[in-house]
Length: 181
Image 1 (cartoon, one colour):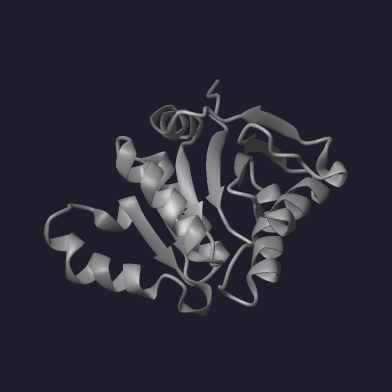
Image 2 (image 1 turned 180 degrees about the horizontal axis):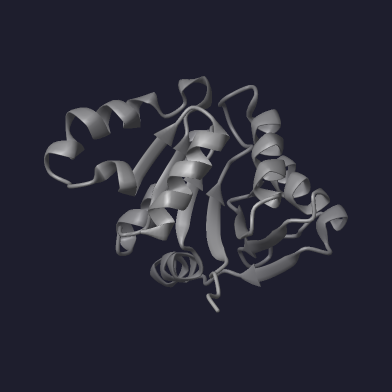
């Protein structure tokens, strides 16, 4: 009998600062979609940022979710029933902790804070896990171009390591394929 591993997907989304005006609805759509999949989702409460629409959508749809929190971060009482895990104060240990807990990373449109956090962790660790970026409203178009024009000449199978897609269904299909290989 085969036992299929339940993958852990770290979601990087930010509701702070300037960014995509549709980010709340995008987070809710992605949260509802991922809740229907057999994955464990990991979200973050850090730098006074908590992606409430994403977390609420996953939780309300019955998805498996854990919030990684910096020390002292207070989770809103409406989300207090969600599992939490304390992040290390040490930046290197925090990056390793998130890397070890995750099988893949997803970046959602929002602000540069989420993209910055994602790439800090990805670069500080083994860079072997797939990174998927939802390119809604062309949020990650620069990464798509960079991958095609620059990175693809040096990194074999870049499309399996860094996935850029315009919709959540395609992103999920390609990410799931990358995780299965």
